[in-house]
Length: 96
Image (tube, rainbow, N blue to C red; front, side):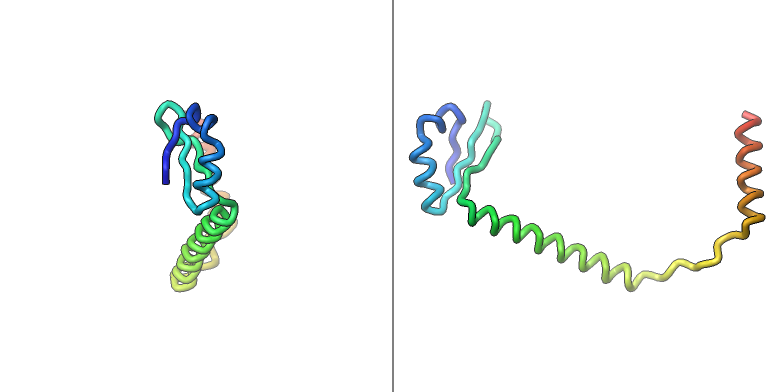
């Protein structure tokens, strides 16, 4: 993998394309900071595919963990108790 400043890359486009066509990568920099990477289209698809597969694996692990986690209890609080809480919150808010 080679690195070129954008200003140098303008003059070396043909060489950059030759390197990329041969399977290499070229990082373009602006003021010393990477701003782009030139790669072959098929390599981009491979990288995207690998990323998607990795994300799917993480999702699978989370789903398995969620399946094993204890289920939340249902029932909650009664409507009357909820109304009491709301009334208390409003009273405290109005008192402030």
